[in-house]
Image (tube, rainbow, N blue to C red):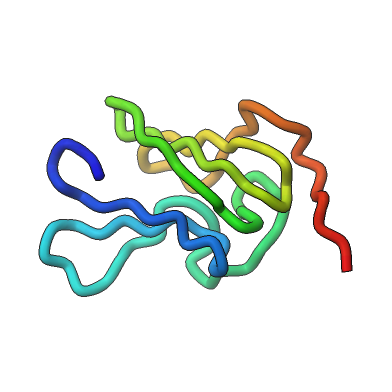
Length: 92
C-alpha cells in the first residue's frame, strides 16, 4: 500500500501486478501483461511473487520463474532487470 492508500497486489497466477485505488472495484495492471500472459521479456512477468514500492511510485517485482527482480518505473510499460539471471527455472 502506498502513501495514498492505493493497494498493489502481486497477482502471481496472472503474471502481473494490479493497482487498486481506494474504494475501487476493479484493478489496473501496472506491471506485466493485462491479459496475464507469462513470459521473460521486459514487458512480461512469470509468477510475480512479491513487490516493493519506492517513494517515487516505482515497483520492484520479484519473479519466481524468471529468477529476477524487475524494476517498473512509474507509468512504464516495461521493466528492467535489476537483480537475478532472467533465465527461467521453470520446466515441464
